[in-house]
Length: 139
Image 1 (tube, rainbow, N blue to C red):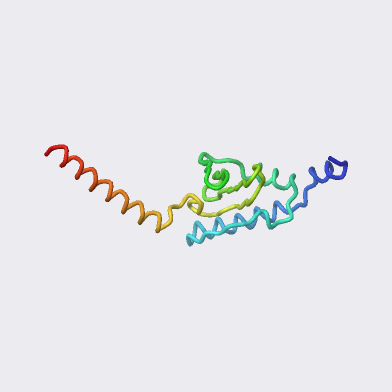
Image 2 (cartoon, helix red, strand yellow):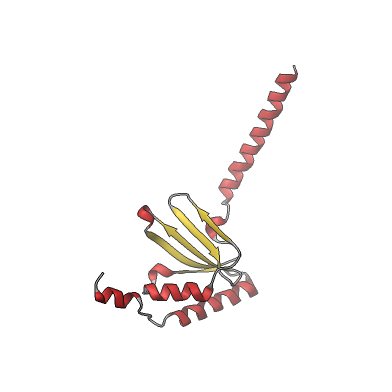
């Protein structure tokens, strides 16, 4: 690592206060109207120090999850209910996407309607198969 890279690692852009104000605005809207929002952290010119400061200031709440579908996803609610940090890692555990989601539940943790319909059909089929198997055993 070069001296410049070492210096840049500790450099703060000063964007975190503005970002926190934006999060606060979205959280207020969520509380008042139910409107959800997301902020793509990868689209912002944040330094390593900025990301560390943001994570420190938002903190970690009681809820967190790790998903292992198509890579690893780390999701945690910050110390502010309704403010979620969602981090997706790709090949080699490299950062693929990172967002702050202001919502009751992160999108990635929400079951999709098509999946729910398929699960409903599958459970119904499993119950019919079980009843049929039990009837065959009793005969």
